[in-house]
Length: 170
Image 1 (cartoon, one colour):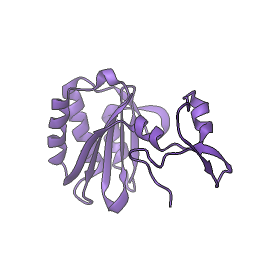
Image 2: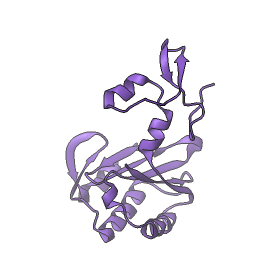
Image 3: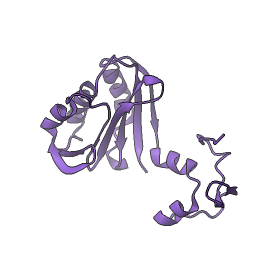
Image 4: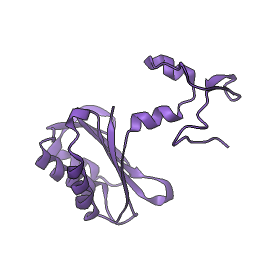
């Protein structure tokens, strides 16, 4: 199970570099900071001290920084707001909730924070997955899941219309 700490900021009140550096400060204090991370799909790990300069390049509107324990995603989302997501891929590394509450306070000093939540991105992904082949690919059981006909693919699919957080099709 993964846990993510999602935050949404008003546009033009912060930057990816400011959010990354705040995250660095918080991670350093929690002992979760890694020496190297992969940045935006580049499989060659980057020294943590150089990531800010990579993110500061003109035109960098989206980034993801992946470590062994934590991952960070930043980008422009719906409504022109900036989304920043810190994902704990290793549940054993998840700090206490009181620490995550303090993180929200620290991040709200970096920009105009309008929304924050903790969520399980893996659970949300499977709440919306319809194609049976994707379940088969990763060995997830579909026993007991409601089925429906998918006219687009002309095949049986998982019925997600009653799932919480389901992205409904028109």
